[in-house]
Each structure stands twice: as C-alpha cells, then as structure tokens.
Image (cartoon, rainbow, N blue to C red):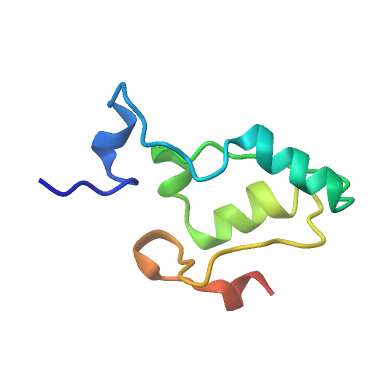
Length: 87
C-alpha cells in the first residue's frame, strides 16, 4: 500500500518517516550560512487547507517575510496557486 506523506491519515499515525535532515541539523546549517531567523510550521490539516490568500495574509505578511525558499513542485491547496503568487 502506498501512502502520501501529506495524507489526512498521516496526522493520525504514531510513527513518522525518517527525515533527510533533522530540524536541529537544518538550524545548525542555517546558522553556518548566517541565516538570521528561521520559522518552522507544522504541516497539518489546518495549514494544508489554507487558501493561497490566507497563507499570504495569516503567515507571510504577519511575519514580514523577506525571503522564502520553496521546492520546485510547490503548490497551494489543490494546486490552485503556484510560486508566482508569492512574488
């Protein structure tokens, strides 16, 4: 059986898949690169179901984000918004 890492069932699972880099290692690397501030969001149903506009207004604008790093396959709920919306 194939499972998506971001399925609704994933929130109910007690075991988590191993991470490529634990968050502590990511923070250490970012400090080496002189990153001033890091904010981790838990990917849950509430975050997953946000509209692109809610994500912009409730997260990015409130935090006064200057730079944002996303993956090349980034998309909002149902792929209704893409990276260009964040520009």
